[in-house]
Image (cartoon, rainbow, N blue to C red; front, side, top):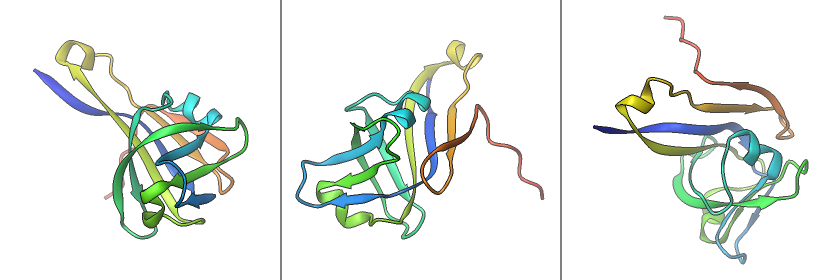
Length: 126
């Protein structure tokens, strides 16, 4: 059996630009792409914490160290500068691969600089 699992996420990144008249995609600081093992042109799911929108697009590279998160094309209707997003990727794993599976979780500050990386989500207190 194969299972689709969270492969990586950029947690609570802040939109720096939205460009309606740009070829569709989401430009992401190259440091963040590397940390989350997201490749340019890879499919990403975006969850807008600010307004509840959820959509799928693909990643493109923004300048390394720039902090850029630019939502482009038609998706610009779903995110505005200052919005907080979760950007996620998923992959399919076999039961054997799941024995060593850990997602890559990247946490940032208000300027989209990496402040922590983990391979699990801590348990919530009841």
